[in-house]
Image (cartoon, rainbow, N blue to C red; front, side, top):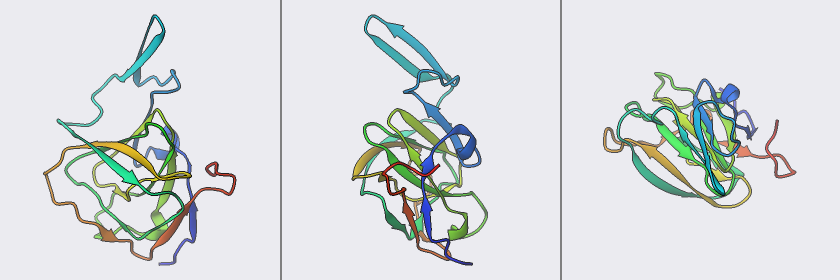
Length: 172
């Protein structure tokens, strides 16, 4: 296993994130998975289907800033996990769900989640805590807590550097 060097985050889309889970865009006003409503001076959107299976707990993580060295990841076999970006873009590093006992450095990908977007990771997807794209940033998450212990496992063949391109925008 070789260390892949720096992994540049790219903007999350339904297409490029599909093998890890789903993407919801509550900012654009066009996502067909969102029910849109408008009123006098406001617009609103909510997911047409429940975001995760089961009654999830709401949490908040305060992440540092990219770039960082992704040295360990966790996964949840018993719950999906939704991540919500509120005010600043965040970077999520993930590796595919697998029966392996550790995430593989060669399989890690990174995505920029912009304000108004949410992603829902499938059960078993390896992931690190998010970091702000250009500065420390808090973010919200939802998962069913208490189903299993959360173990942070060293990345096999890692750690790997996660970053964004030099202009501060994510790589295409």
